[in-house]
Image (cartoon, rainbow, N blue to C red):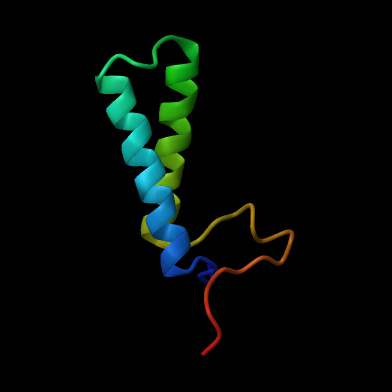
Amino acid sequence: MKKNMGTADRVIRILIAVVVISLYFANVINGTIAIVLLAISGIFILTSFISFCPLYLPFGISTKGKK
C-alpha cells in the first residue's frame, strides 16, 4: 500500500471521528444513524493511522504532498 493521505487529511478525519464519538456518548445521536456514523468514524480512524484511503486509489487522488 502506497500512502496517499497527507497530514491535513488525516487530522481532519480524526477530528470528525472524535466529534461523532462525542455526540454518541452525549446521547445527541442514537439508533441506526449512530451505528452508521460510528462505523464510518472507525474507518476514518483506521485509514488515518495507516495513511491510506482505498477510495482514493481508483480515482488517482493523493492528498500527500510532493517531495
